[in-house]
Image 1 (cartoon, rainbow, N blue to C red):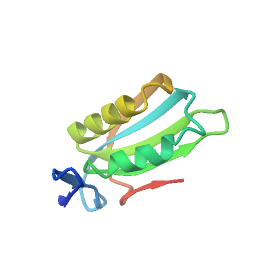
Image 2: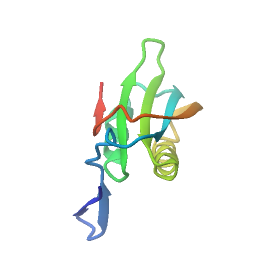
Image 3: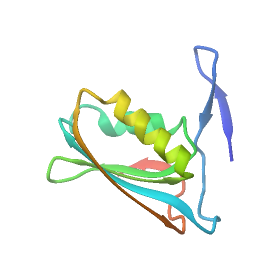
Length: 113
């Protein structure tokens, strides 16, 4: 499902109002961000970036100071989304660890936990 909205700059932007749970399998990634990633708006920024991609999942702070991102969608959308988060938050990220798999969809929409 693609939903388009017009942003202030006049461009059409894809918005994620995606429910992948009806699909047989989807690309899923677990991403751990290390660095100065808590207390800098990382989760909020990630949620805002997610609105531009057809992805579902969540982002949350971990007790050890990292940020966890669980995301699913097509492999191309997930890759582009994670790259956009890395680009937007590049000054805060020291290390990124990614694992991926194909599995049944588990998420609807994108949230901050």
